[in-house]
Amino acid sequence: KRTMSNSSLATYSRQPTVNKSNPRTEKISKITIHHWSGVIATAKQGVDYFCSKECMENRQVSANYVIGNDGSIGMMIPENRRSWCSSSSWNDQRAITVEVSNSKRGGDWPISDAAMKSLIKLCADICQRNGIKKLYYDGTKNATLTRHCFYSNTDCPGTYIKNHTSYICDEVNKLLGVKVSVNTSKTNPYKKPTMVLNSSNAAYGKKYAGRSEVKWIHYELQRLRLYSGEADGYFGPMTVNAVKAFQRTHKDLNGKQLEADGSVGPLTRDALEKAVKE
Image (cartoon, rainbow, N blue to C red):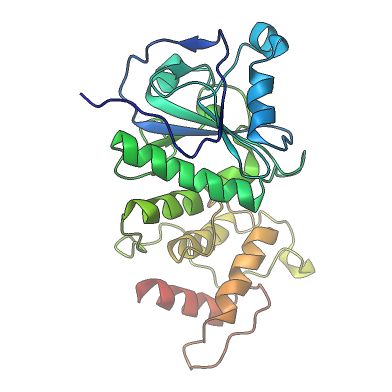
């Protein structure tokens, strides 16, 4: 039987007297990343808040780990105990839950580079110690990475973390020694565009126009690991930046450097399709 241990990456530890279940009844097989919905400077500040009378009595929530905006990591609920974090006993019995500070309030609820770096290291450490061979997200509760929004009417873990899900999984899997490669065995299920202008071009019209065509672009860029968002058919700033990144490093089929304008015309489309197949 595997003996549950805790992460040595945590530099501060404190347990609340309530809002936990002892012992955990299921094997750890998942990680659930939450965002704080606010800024906490350090993990100590976050853990101490969870252990405050207000939180224990009124909010009745907890997490296994907390990551501060400065990248510090704190432990609150030991891994052999279930936290109260995901609005789901089923998930929390199986998952290590991690609360991550945002770097600012509102918007897409971003997190700092320091917090992201610590999150990736912590997730890899959790996987290694608990026999989780690969971290992956497939949009269902069966994956090894799950979301709070599966079980409650919430936006958690926030748009920024959601858009970086593929990146987080890839970086964790690199630390686990899992080969991360572009899957070229599947045909893009969406419609290949004749021309898609970027969202700032007046000729493009509505940002959701040609949604299936934009999903084709998202799908191809995801496979090249240039786009970490979801294939939602929205040609917004994140998509424009990913297209520009591709164009700066690729040539058209005639060997001429692509213009990095963020638009997907026939030259960029054909180069993108070729790059995925290589």
